[in-house]
Image (cartoon, rainbow, N blue to C red; front, side):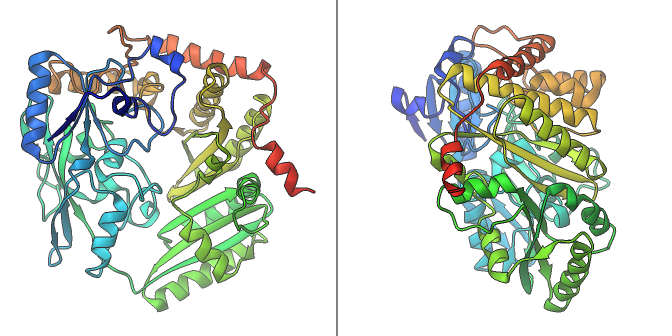
Amino acid sequence: METTDDKMERRLYSHDLAPLPKEMDLIFKTMPDQVVRPAYTEEVVQIVRKAIATNKPIVPRGAGSWGLGGSVPVKGGITIDMTGMSRIISIDEANLVVTVQPGITWNALSEALDAKGLFLPCYPSSAPSATLGGWIATGGTGIGAFKYGSAGDLIRDMEVVLPTGIVVHTGDKLVPQNGGGPNLNWLFVGSEGTMGIVTEVTFSVLPKPEELRPVSYSLDALTTFQPALKKLVRSGVAPMHIMFGDRLHFDYLRAIGKHVPEVGCLITMALTGTKAYVDMEEKVIDDIMASVGAKKESKETAQHEWSERSYEFRVRELGVGAIPGEILVPIDRMNVVLEGTAKLIKQLKMNAPIIGTVADNNTIMLMPYYLTDEHKLVASTAAMGFAKRLGDLAFENGGRPVGLGIFFACNLAKYRGKEGAHLIRNLKDMLDPYGIMNPGKMVETGTRYGISMPAFLMNFGMHMMGSVKRILPRDRIGEKELSKLKK
């Protein structure tokens, strides 16, 4: 087990995808006191027992590729870097399951399965860097979810070290949980590292399909896609994945020298199955997209877009932060939310491209992202008000934001209702009687002083950030590069 107290190395663990301005250290102690990297379950148990004995908070962490602070300390303590637990324990080709440690990346697992003619049904768009355990902890919905379900749907069993140091298994490796009492897998999926530390996962896999075929269609605007999407989800065809980006997203990519099509927006779908089945699905989708005036793009364009599926935020190459907002909304409210988002972007004087995916037959995930200088306190914190107002827009339209972390723990009662939130907090207290497991997240917004911010105060603060953003000068980040395209 590796351990370090080096200040420079600890500083690397004080942020995730969206670094905080250094002034936030006045509220949160984001730098851990120690970083440990276990290799086996027994070592994780030792760390938990030590934390109990010394009353130190512990923060499990994967690759840190999320952006809500879920893997960032709020009271220092011990950060447990799980990337050292990256072994494939077994690939059971007969029963179509794989058992792995949680620190393996989704890409590494996919490549190992591919070599044996097997197929990973669902994975995050950040698969090259995201770890298995990290994405399970955030409860993500990603590539493949439309057809095969999210990662949580495909879990057979997990080994979890509880905050008391006890090790439990949550399911059965070879059969589903039906009729076996409450499904304990889902107690930990989406718990953001606050209920326990996953040290082993058994995951369902599939035989590799005969064909995986991407297809792309261009439209003038994303709002034109909604009627086609309504037809598609009722057509009986089931693409593995559906993703889209608007004009500004592709303009930014061109501005940094990437080869992308000149389109108003682009819809890309991935089809899987036998060649005959994929041919049939493609024909149905062609007809549906043609009915709304979409242009089918070349095979080369579709293949290029599919190869870029894990790199949505290449615009960070401009040398700035690209902070995404994520919301889930019903397909029926898609255009209302798109129009509301455009209005919000204009009000806050921002440049915010919109990308997204279709999560299931009734739900889209919209991910507007905005460019900001994440090291400037006023600009970066004011921009957080955009995420708050975007979440409010989702709530107003039957949806919600995605994730809680530090900054949106105040939304728990909105997500689950007052009594539901109370039950989750009670479960947290029962499983974590010493209060050491990733405190200050999900069920509360904690601070370095051990005092939790009331939900109304956090919501008010986030709303005020948006108000500040409205009176600040217009964001100019990226505009110089965009203007060069027009010359």
